Length: 72
Image (cartoon, rainbow, N blue to C red; front, top):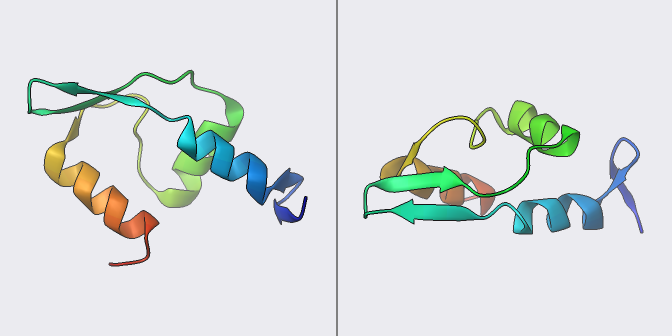
């Protein structure tokens, strides 16, 4: 395992991101289904968006997905 962010490994970060599931609310947007932890808080701070405590519209989710794939 290769260190990627401080003491965290890339595998740990990717596993956390993959586990961040959301519920689609009547085609309006998304709410989080994952448990908030220190690593999720750190990722939110680094990426400059919050998916743990706010409603995410479809448009916002598409923007987050584009950023995560490096297609800004």
